Image (cartoon, rainbow, N blue to C red):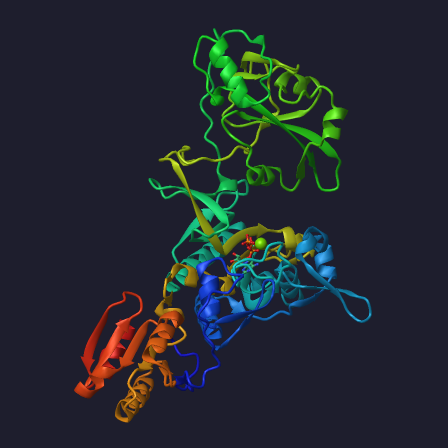
Length: 588
Ligand code: ATP
Ligand code: MG
């Protein structure tokens, strides 16, 4: 651990404001949450709202320090904006409304609307607009490490998903697209250094389908079973992406010449894919699987400010619609499933037997999975109860309005980069880099004087790191069943020195050792409590300082013990020369 100030004193457990708990808190499900509470790092105040106690605050400050060093390292400049913000800028960008229930809104005594900032694109843009007005001022990158507020629907796992949390947010302003790419790349590189220093195992996933130009948005996900984000990757190529961003590889079109004609069959009681496949395997002289059927799923879609419209989605019957992928494909429009009333209002929709024909004849927008290429032949609904059509060929018998990425992605699907197959895994979002472009500079009409005397509108990037979330993420990735195991860079101390011998001489010796280690520049927690060695050892494991030093029975023979909390290894060393041994154990 690097010292935060030169005046740190030895932390005595007899004095430290700390109460460790033997039992897991009742509301905790994930290891990091249980351990951070049990080890007295954080305490719950309300759902998603936590206090930081001394050791927790130290770890948080260490994470902040690493983030700050790397941000300063790319020339970003730290400022601090308020968390309490007026409504107007968020009204200008429509986020006052768009943010929905996620925003904490409040009124002042005069009845004016305020909010607690969930993210600060508006305010940074206004701040830059207020100070800078010439091309000579650019590029500029500003950041803050600040408390954010979001009224999350499901606060979770203690500080992992809080309603009050600490974020590093930075914003770059460039005059050219090239400049924006450079600022983006600088952040991406800085994030890699940050997460590596913090000892976090992570992957970088493309967050959008690349419609905005490839690397317009990427997320850093910490690898974790308990993560809420599912991503897929190809072990063979290193490709990784959010499920929403996966593009299906479309097969090559098939010539339609010579394909059998479409035929309608009576298929009583076959409203599901399974019943339809059973029927086909009995009635047709070939083997049919769900992948040979075309399932048509109906939703209604509304563009912002628009009317509800029907949308039909055709996907191979062996796949389900993935609601997240569908939502991402339709954005910014919203969608809903059809109600019975909607079906009643559109009698051509025959539940269980919907086919492309009726959809297209009735002007319903019809988008299909990219696998439904021209020349593919399908078994699908014939728009009458108990009837299906066999051999309906895309591009010959029906022409959809386009394709949509809405079908689920499955393990074993081909990787979009053409190398290997996809496997899914879970992660926790710890950082996000995003090329925003001119959305906010347009909204606030930020124009600066260009080199040629004409006005130029800066283009913007926005970049976030979940600082408080990282404390939980590090705990999640670095613990065992006994407790936390902090990487050196963020540990609340370098050495946890346990006095496990009641003799006055040993006690004094331990005090002397602590003083010497402190003088050598190490940060020491000294367990000088009047408690049993067993209790002290348990606490040392729970608190998770990387190096534990024990002054115990061996003292009489002139020995102390050094334990490595990471590897679990322990060894005896002579008291003479112990300081040098411990310093080298800590500094590695
Ligand atoms: P998530 O999908 O996890 O809600 P987000 O997409 O809303 O994250 P951003 O708006 O990009 O996140 O915020 C930047 C970073 O702030 C995230 O990468 C994440 O690490 C962190 N963060 C976001 N929401 C929370 C929260 N409720 N509690 C703690 N950290 C958060
Ligand atoms: Mg969020």
